[in-house]
Image (cartoon, helix red, strand yellow):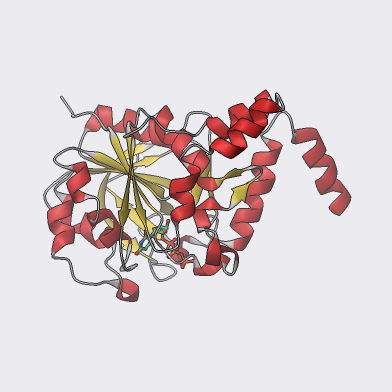
Length: 289
Ligand code: UTP
């Protein structure tokens, strides 16, 4: 019997240099895709996978995130008085139950591995999800739910992957597989940004993981890796010597909202997926072209 995945770590403490100056006063993951902050989509995806507790790893100047997931009496009362009930529902839909969210300060952005390690006490001794909140996934079945399905089948650790665009595998973290049969395959390794021509597969790590708590002991003493940062990939590679890892090629498309064009593509793609906006969005795009 595998232990249920109940908690998710959402590291948002990075500097967001690729989307500055927008990310200077608005945390990157609070930038809008259509009419909601990116984090709203991520929390919705996590809930659909059965997540009950959200652990945000935040940095200085990111109080807007806590405020977004709190009630806003002035706005709510004004909407109530004006009987704007559908907008009121939209404003309230992301509100958590009291006690469902924790916010941990990373204090210095020392890397994704360090950010995840900051969650150790809140996670405790159970498997947990990691969601990179700048990776937005357009899917039928939510991406994290697909990862949980895979975890319930094979246990251990799961890394969600996706085929890289032709000729671009060297830009990403790429997995090595022990044979490829269907969408769920045992991993034998992973490599950050392999030199062109040396990629062990074309599958990149796309920002959703299910990890066992033993990763925390490894991250605790880990040296800095690429870019002088404590890398989650290095920690996972180390854990792989002792535990099973499977790569799940999920069904869907990832938009990297931490990148200018990725954020633009996400806005267009998510507007086109919205029944209430698709026609108007299509017309606007055609006019611009
Ligand atoms: P990224 O490297 O994509 O985010 O990290 P970044 O550092 O904000 O982006 P750039 O390169 O400066 O534009 C992936 C995720 O991990 C978080 C980031 O906030 C992002 O959601 N992260 C990264 C942390 O929480 N802490 C860190 O020390 C590093």
